[in-house]
Image (cartoon, rainbow, N blue to C red; front, side, top):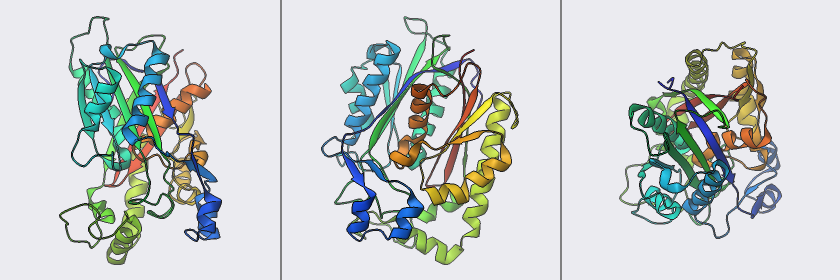
Length: 349
């Protein structure tokens, strides 16, 4: 999708709790073998001791507003995405985020597209913002996209609930402006998403539908559902779908951005925050064959942030000033379903 008018990322933030869950402790406890620990490649990940998941999203959003010099009352849309439990059984965390920010004029919307939720939130926010030609009092339309996830016991083991991924706790926020302004941090040139719904059973497995959460097992166990899927379908279907999706979203996102795979402006490819072996087997070879862009792996010290990988990547691109004027980057996100997204962002000239 190419925005029908210039859209910018005015600011973005990654908020991490102070606690840390250490890989050595998981190995010492017998939850991981040494070989598995090496394949993951995360020495430690952020661990929220008391911070609720949507509370971390609020902290990230407040920081984002402060960086942009914008008051929450200017927001037209407040989108919140998440992967795991938000702290209450039947409740809208999106409305909580808007209330805590003081975004009383914004429409709160919740998105649960699992790990790709943050990228989906950006895409849907841009679509709504650019479809509405009316401007707010300051001449712009503003959209806030937040994510917040906390992966904790008793229902989730961040080290062993999945294959090839360690889950870290964090809040993220991205502030979008339409039309774009020259002082904004990044210009959003395009965003493309692709789905392969034939893979949905990788997270359903052979389990019957249940009447309540964690009926089948005391903890979330994506390993069990993936084993069931692989027993029935094997590995090839996922491998083909993953490669096709990555190539497709890169090609379409660059085309919509008016760039090619060897464009000299294209400097970085910001990877999803998966384990080292997963990136080396399923992402890096495909990207090396597809684009001339240096891979950026910001996830070694954070792990996978649930719905927040893409937003966190944007925040770290901005914070590190990684892009020189005119340079561009691909920012990736992927998650269960399966769904893949690629954003093309460019630093202002």
